[in-house]
Image (cartoon, rainbow, N blue to C red; front, top):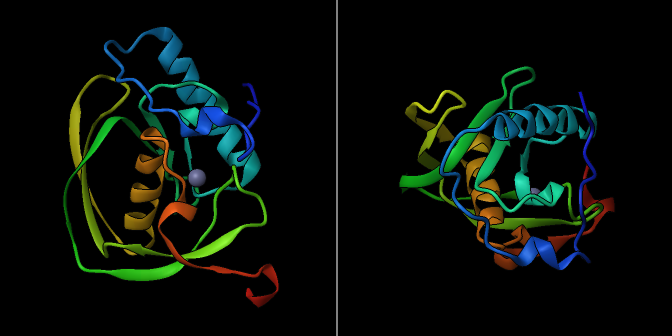
Length: 155
Ligand code: ZN
């Protein structure tokens, strides 16, 4: 088990585009395991590899405790509806903003065994998919926030 360092806004790496995973090597498996430990320690809802300084298209999402979803080379293949909720990011501590996101999102990705799967998320899970996939293209939630929210406004 290893807790990785989560990079923050000042690090320009966050703005870079991550590369596809061509082969699921033991190194990628180890990355997934370490990212899981890191996500649990940070108590976040999701983590992209770029946030631990690794420019690979790998993300974890966990909106339900203990149910970690691992996505390798994820793509959004369908989305519908609209939601405007408050979002934050482990790389942007103390920043919160209301974003424009679809209400329902279907992703296609590889799991750690190299099998393709599809999953549809609604609400918070849809938001988490969008947020983490944006990281792979160097985007941050502040880019499409409709307004920022002061920490004191949050309950
Ligand atoms: Zn984030």
